[in-house]
Each structure stands twice: as C-alpha cells, then as structure tokens.
Image 1 (cartoon, rainbow over the protein chains, first blue to last red):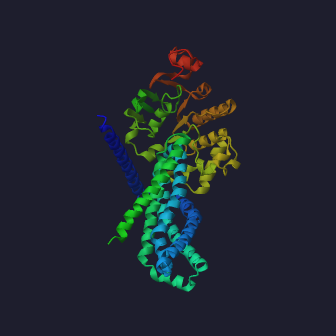
Image 2: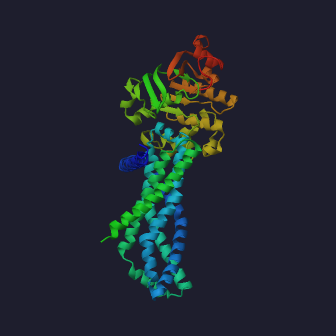
Image 3: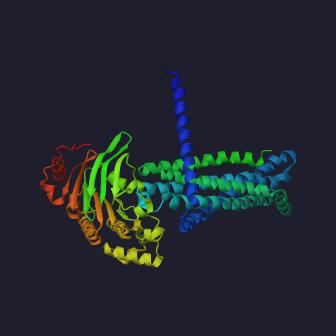
Length: 260
Length: 248
C-alpha cells in the first residue's frame, strides 16, 4: 500500500489540474457567451482599452527597444564567426515580429495587467462589491470580465505591432551607431526580408495572449479567497498562469503557423 | 411578503442553515438577530440568490425565487452592505445612481445625477460629496452613501446587512433613525440583520432570533424583552451564561 501512495498523490494532482483546466475553460466559454449577448458596457470597455492598451505602451516599448538592441549585438557577434554580419537586420526583424515582440510583450502585459485585474476584482469580491453588482441587476461577467477580455484581445496586438517597430528600431540604432552597419542597407534589408505573414502571425499571437492575460486576471480575481492574503494569492496565481499559458500557447501557435 | 420554508445551507461540514422557517409580512420591518457566524448573512443572501440554498423554498410575493426572471426580481430590491460595498472606481453620485445609469431603469445622466443628489440629501449628505470618491469619505458617510444607493431606485424591499457595524454610537443612532424613517416613508418591506440591540429597538416591527441554523424565536419587538425565551434573553442582555455558548 505504501508503494501506491506516490501514484495516488500523482493521480490526485493530475485530477486537480484537470479540474482547474475545466473551470478555466468553462469561464472562457461563459465570457465568450456573454460577449455575444447584450447588454454591452461600452464605457467600461473604453476605460479597459485605455488602461490595458495605452498605459502598457511604455513598458512594452522599453522591453522591445532593449530586446531589439541586445538581439542586434548577439546576432552580430554570432554572425561574425562565419562572416555573416549582414544578416543582423533580417534576423532582428524576424526575431522581433515572430517571437520576441509578441512573447515578451505578452509577458510584460501579463505582469502589468493580469496582476492589476486580479487584484482589483479580487478586492471587489472580498469587499462585497461583486455581490453589490448582482443586487444592482448587473451581471459581474458582463460588467467586469467581458470589457477587460475584449479590450485586451484587441489592444495587445496593437501593442505587439508598436513593440515590433520599436524593437526593430532598437536593433537599427545599435546596428548603425555601435556596429557600423550602413543605415540605408539596414532599413532596406529589414523591409525586403519581412513578409506579411511574419508580422500577421505575431499580431495573431498578440490577440491570443491578450485574451489569456485578461481571462486569467478575471478568473483568479472572481475566485479570490478571503482577505488580503486571498487577494495576494489570486494576483500571484493570475500572473503565473497567464505567463505559463502564453509560453505554452506560443509554442502551439508557432507549430500551427510555421510547421511544414 | 417574504417566506422562507425549511431552508438549508451547508459549506462543507459547516451546516449554517438547518431548516429556517420565517415569514416577513409586506411593509413590515423584520430584524434578524443572532451571534456572529450564525448564518444571518447567508440567509439574507439566499433570498437575493447570491447564495443558493441546498434545500427548502424561498417565496417572494407568491413567486419562488429560483423561478423568477432575475433582473426584474432584483430590480425590486435595494441592499445596504455591511462595509458599504461602494464601487471604488466610481464617484459617489455614480455609485448612488448606478442602477439609473444602465440597464432597464436607465435614465439620462443629468436626471440620474439629480436623483442621486436628492437621495444623498435624504440621507443627510450635501451636494459637494457627489463628485468625491468613496475612499475620500468617513465610514459613516460611506454607510449613508450605501443607504442612498439602496433607495435610489425606490425598491419595494430593502435589506440592511449590519448597518451600524464599525460606527460610533452617535453615528449608529443617526443611521438607525434614517433607516426607520426611510422604511416608513417608502412603505417598503425591510429585512435587517444585526447584533446591535440599539438597531433592533430603533428599526424593528418584528424580531427573529437565528441560532444553531434555525429561528429560535420570532415575535413583535415589544414582546422581545418579556418573551421568556432563554436564547433571546441571553442575547439581548449580553450574558456569557446561558444556552448560547460564549465560545463558538
């Protein structure tokens, strides 16, 4: 019997994980269902768009510029081993738009937005504001979850697009000013090399990551435990879950988009 | 009229409600008393559908609460929450007029604001608090704003959850008097849960004592002091000795 204990523990952990996945899937289905049915809270959507999209621009921009700059340095250093320094613009561009732009942008938004949504909704739950919404004939999913999830799904691809451009600019600044690459050649290499699908796939990833970030923030906020500790746990869980799901879905989407 | 019939609710092993039977006549003010953690809030939230009972039936004006159209049903209620439950991100007037700014009772913003200011005046607050945020107000002012929000849409039924908790005795008296005045003025059916005996005497027409998951005693507030029920006597006199265990 003692030998079976680890197997039983593993089994119960797997069952708990599957149950959690089921609850999140159900929450996502409810969100989409409410998204398609009135009433719609346009003002809350607009506010969420500004909070999630506009106010995330600095952090996404800073992440992108330093990533693009570091990428240019690394590729130059690696490429110089076999006299291929000229690939810097094209690799920086493809690296940013396909992978680093959406993934790092998504992770930064997860850190900034999933945490703030989970903390805000979690605090609303423990201070009975969610119950108050219900008694005021307002569905919390429609009023709190739908505007945030929709705003993040639409805003994060835009952030990713802006991040891509800033990241490429970071690579350009380092390439031209630090590594001595020709400015016109750098730009033409970047533009000629990138294809529509490179950019579009990154933006689609951004939309998926935005959906994940807001969904996790709302899910953990709505299911927050009692007190400050409960809200703290919900916030931490939202960021961890959003980050892991971003990385996992990034792999799946890359397989889907680019595997032959 | 609100009727609860054999309502049960458990959270895991904790059987909070074990067969609650209670009737609140239309237009009456019923106060539910009982110690902390005896299920008073659960009972109140069960009527609103915020908590789903495991068994039993709750009837409001002849309709089973599980079979009603939720929005129309909830539009008949107003509720003052224990901590106010004001929305931090909205100003005071937007909190008060919340129901009037969206949904089936939606009115133009100017009209909603005017109603909100009138309700704020009714609870003794000046117009200059209307554009402040809840966090800028004292506890007593937040309770008043919560009360103004509860009555903003002229509900037929108003619930008050621990209306004087956390207030000084003078402010508690002010809130009690306000609740009584408003309930009488509006002719609303009221259900208040509290363990503050000054609230009971100020607000109640009828009193019910909840203990061990059932209603131990119910009757007219004037009979409360002479009812002879050992649970009620221990509770209203605040004695440590008696059938209610002091350490629960």
